[in-house]
Amino acid sequence: NNGGGYYNHSLFWTVLSPEDRGYLSGELKDAIEAAFGSKDAFIDAFSKAAATQFGSGWAWLCVLPGGKVEVCSTPNQDNPLMPGVTCGGTPILGLDVWEHAYYLNYQNRRP
Amino acid sequence: MSSPGSKIIIDSALRAAANLRSSSMPKEVTQRAAAMLSSAPSGGKHTLPDLPYDYNAIEPVVSSETMTIHHTKHHNAYVTNLNVALEKLDAAVSSGNVGAIVGLEGALRFNGGGHINHTLFWENLCAKDQSELKDGPLKKAIEDAFGSVDGMKKELSDMSIAVQGSGWGWLGYNAKTGRVECATRANQDPLQATTGLVPLMGIDVWEHAYYVDYRNVRPNYVNAIWEVINWKVVEERLIAAQK
Image: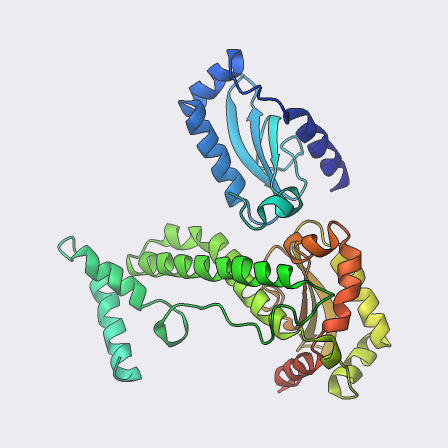
């Protein structure tokens, strides 16, 4: 719980940015388009994973051995790197969907 | 519906008709059948129960802002989504789709549990000046099991504070041992369905229950909630469970 929480939040702070570095390019763009068809389709899939995780948890974009990417979600402070977790691969993007991450600004409106 | 008897006959006819899976059966009929066979009380849908008090009744322990959002948004969403899941369940049952039936387990557990848990929760809270644990079967049962009321409060508080992620703390009645005991559940897992314990008193420790008023300091919320427990209701539940 605490090891996971430390890792997950450490990763989270690094993937957020106040500036709009919003262009997607290079290998990541290719991998996302290969797996989802388009950036928008990826965002839909990721948003769905985030919105449907019951209770506390995280949504992830992970890279699998071989370079494919996939979206999944984990409960509480679990992380795809942990053994036994059904989400696989190495997380490269995480979204905290514990209520504490959004409650003051969005209340119950996680989507 | 004219009488319970006619409802049973109509229900059976609809289920039989739906099971025939005739492609020439109009879609509207199957949809109406599914809605009609919904398992809510009186054949209708589940509804959000009113709070037994005003939204500001348990201030300052929990603010009226929290109670309003908690009741009208969170609990309401569980009720809405439970009804959706039940309609899907009826459609799956009527069409004999076992895979779909099993696939609904998560939604039923989460939303059904959420509805049960919150309904119990509102009832076991009350204004501070009405919160009093008098001598009686409940006080005795607690003292028998925990040595003292304070002993029980400490144990349940510790367990509730320690829940990882979202969940609930419960004081429950164990019909096998005849004693009361404390338990916690993750997410919205309902106590009785998953442990057999009869729920007497619940404490919601999802962050939405306390974040506005206490931010991340769950211990302050859990320690404060004892001031607004409706012990009368908790005792009535114990007496009912012991029958």
